[in-house]
Image (cartoon, rainbow, N blue to C red; front, top):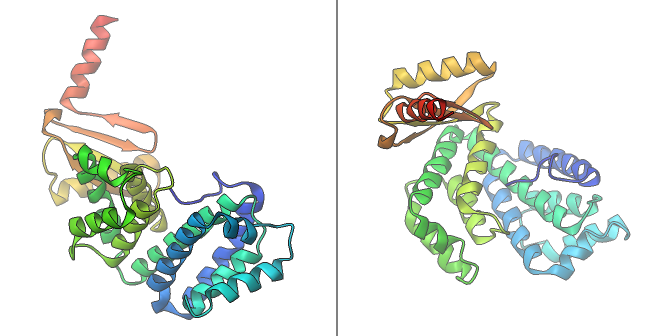
Amino acid sequence: MTATASTLHAASREALAAVELTLLDVLESSPTSSGTVGEELFAVVALLDREIGLRRTVADSSTDSAGRERLVADLLTGKVSAEALKVLTTAAGARWSSPRELVDGLESLAVTALLVGAERAGRLDAVEDELFRLGRIIADHTDLEQVLTDRGAATEGKVALVRELVGAKVDRTTVALVENLVGSPRGRQVVTGLEELAAEAAKRRERSVAHVISAGPLSEAQQERLAASLQRIYARPIALHLEIDPDLGGGLVVKVGDEVIDGSTTGRLDALRRRFAG
């Protein structure tokens, strides 16, 4: 969902790394600005998505970098905070591989700013869990996902629907992340985007994510034992994202990255059927 080294070309990777240093420096100097900076960066991402000419001009590395910085400063001074403006002018002066990768990079920086704020507030665990749970709710209601991804539907209506769904029940960071995903999908599916955002939150805590499906609820002690076992297997801390599926019949299905550990009753029966069929 967010721009990473694996999805950007070389010049954009260098640009993103440089601008991220500026972002972290800004957030260190103004610890309470994380949420504001993140939301303002999202607003500029939406602006650049709409204004193709502006996007191309800001990302045109054949022009003078100082001129691009002045353009962004003239356009946004007074409209965004000083902290966000510093990040945006730095991004404008950097060399990006394409206008699209500039926008991808700014979106990644917005996500980083919001997650840093949640981390400092001691809310990163909650944000990660809320993103995952919302993704499961939408995945279980395909009609809801269709509405949220309908290109013909008004963005305002989709954002209003999200606000109605989450209400005052979730963290402000979660709301900002979800509203951006729904309001500026840029070809992404909502459920996949939410899963990727949850993974970003887990990554920020230097933990991998294990998607665990069980036939019934797991007690806190069972969750602790499972997390400890997975940590021994993968040699790193593991965050559990839990889902209940009574159709499993019993046991667990655990997915970490591309690896699936199927210890469910259904999975074992399927394996036996394949063995006898072969």
